[in-house]
Image (cartoon, rainbow, N blue to C red; front, side):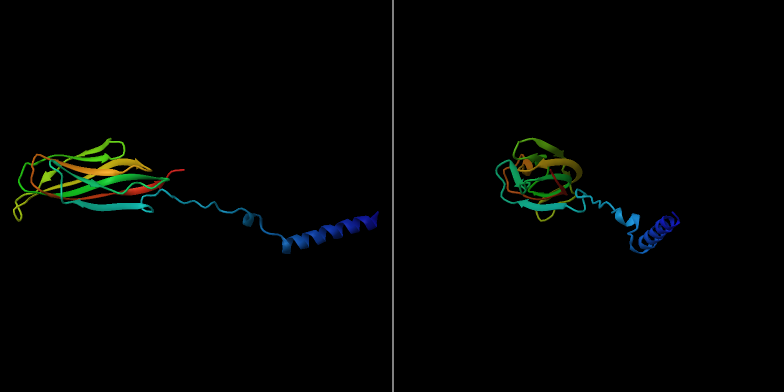
Amino acid sequence: MKNKTFQFAGMLALLAVGGKYYAVPAYAQVKAAIVQSRDEPARNFYSVSLSCQTPTFGYCVTDFPVVPSGKRLIIQHESALMSMPTAGTITSLDLRNKTTGAIGAFLSPTQMPGAYANAVYYASNENILVSFDAGQQPEFIVFTNSSANFTTVTTISGYMIDIP
């Protein structure tokens, strides 16, 4: 009986020594969860500037790129500069969804003081919140009561997110 007790004690000692030098610490088996914000605005920044220089009578349309599949475009800011032949000619500014025809934002033009090179400048610079889903196309439209040519430069900015 004494012999079996010594054998059992020897086995325990051997296991203790082996465990001390060969065991992996328990905390090493717990792996940290990798967290990332895929939809963070800074990761997927979007900004496009386009111009309309040959308007159709009464309006000028700027079509932005179609939103790619699997994405959603969130527009947070719009800015535009319009060079008109005379004052008081802009009647409306819209940011629309060309695909559905829905108006996402009505915008306010502000006439800049003075006239430059025989033109009156208007500006629009607004924080907005409009979304466009995959396959949809943002469109900026300037409506005017003038038949004269005018120029518009428009920038929309925001970010894209993945749609599962």
